[in-house]
Image 1 (tube, rainbow, N blue to C red):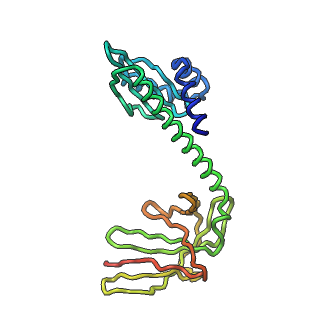
Image 2: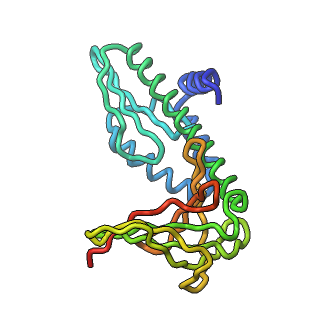
Image 3: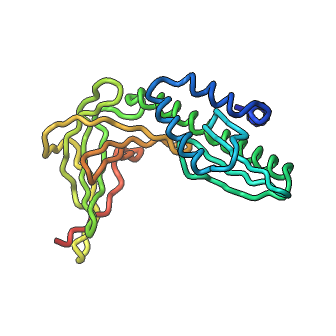
Length: 241
């Protein structure tokens, strides 16, 4: 959505009857979502006691309740699924309040649109595992609290759109210190464990793509990129016990 489209959407929402717009939105939800959102609405209304719903922004489930004083205005705003207000401000004039709400709504709508776009991109990436991982690739896991453990896993199979078959492989220590620490590299095809399946999760950070698998409750492994010649950079480890 362009900046102009966001501004138009917010302006239209601010001109609409907020309560009617909210009611229409609720009617379009299925049973479970209706009950969940209705509970959110009721808690928000309780927080905004004495104020009237003035604006509803469907694009990010934003609600603004206002109350008019003798010489000022109070506005309370909510976003998404939260029941705690994100702002509760006093304004010296209606125009200042409206300007603030308009800017606030545009910012939140843009954020919601960007989040939805990232979610769609993530969903598309998740179905393209073979574009980023191939049989023979290596994953590295770095874990531990008082020491740094390094484990390596080799991809021995790919199932469906997002499942990898992995086997643990041994490592070669290439550097040591007198503090029981050093550096190691994976030793491909030297298997030391049985094969197991794990669902891969693909993350896009800027222009880079990272692939990770969750191994257990305390560790995960990420795809280790080889050098041009096929070798791997070493990883630091420590072993004090």
